[in-house]
Length: 426
Image (cartoon, rainbow, N blue to C red):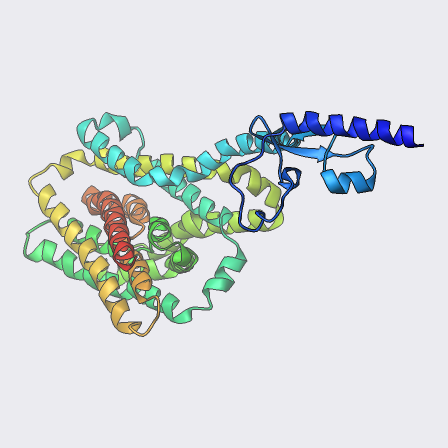
């Protein structure tokens, strides 16, 4: 018994010396550990500068508690690497999934290129008109119908219910669309004929632009500036678009009827086909066939950008002679003044009506977009279909471009202002 004990003691002593020669301990010890006299109690041990995890498989509990020696030391880094390898192998399908969805995300973010596309198509139409001349007026109605269908697919009844919780803001946006804007349109249309001496058809074209519903681009501009209010903007635009089937023809009759003949029934039928039916189709498809909507939704943004580019460039290319004519600059000046007045009126009147609101600045920007940005494509389609004089379509053609450029210029200006305010606050 004594012999076996002495042999076991010698073996343990050799093991102790062997491990002590290989273990390298940190020289800096905290004050709490300075009271520990035995170096083997310092944790964690290191071999060649690498932390190790020790396991004791054959020593008794007494010996292991005294010496804390292990016959097998494994670097922690190896276990970590093994764990990482396992995690990476198990998550490889997720990584592949992410790679697959990247292309879809790119498609969905195509709308961010819209301001640049509008500017590029404008310059291309002015420099080389044949590039868009093929997109004749017969394509305007189907193109606008496609854009309205995209709005319906990306909307749901929940969006409307949520936004209707702000009835005062919706009413203010509606007043801006169908009261403030037509008043400004009548004012600048009259100025065009009386002060500038332009043809009556030009004044009628300016008034027609003021009678149509809000542009879908206003919702995107709101999203870029104040994302939280984007659903409210969508509801405002959708409401004005849906009711435009009745409001636009009667406003046109009121403002233009004494100057040019207006086909009210024809306008109602046309707006129903171009606006109401495509939005309703998109909503129904989203409601009853959500899988189909999920499949086609990623492709709608790039197609919408392409269609918008054609709708912006084509009117300029087709009416290039009227645009560069002697009175072309006068029309451009009047259109810019009309939209600028609408942007300012929407911003200022909202500030007066909602001065006690916590998010008054964001609401001002949203309603400024709603008042200043019109569906000039709809006005252009109506001008080509219901007015014999081709000059009526010139103001809507110029408005399509200037409204987009001015709206997205405001987006950049207001975003820079918000960044400066955030820097000052921080």
